[in-house]
Image (cartoon, rainbow, N blue to C red; front, side):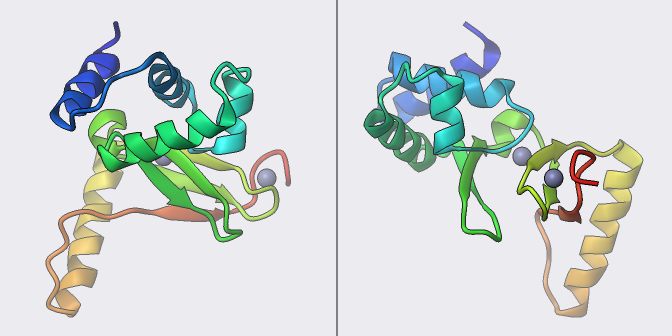
Length: 144
Ligand SMILES: [Zn+2]
Ligand SMILES: [Zn+2]
């Protein structure tokens, strides 16, 4: 059992939810992916091992327990990824041409700069930021 599996199992236990084989497959697929995935992507990635109806149910249960977080694209597609407490803090590259959403981690010093910029922006409005999410929109390498 991986570290992520153990963390998820513990969290689900707190929510009185069983970590079924289907849910495990979803978590495994998301842990292995390099960005948020739609239900259709996940269904294909786990080779239809989990029926679509129970895949929807699994994602709802995992989202409710805070294991999985939804990512909403401008084109109205919902994709899912492991929540940041499991996956680590990161940002997204969003291709406006093909819709690809890719995770990106930035070096510590840049992340520090980003945090200070976010703090400055927040303070202009008397707001104290505790977190941020950054989406970089543009064109991916395949679409250029
Ligand atoms: Zn693209
Ligand atoms: Zn992500």
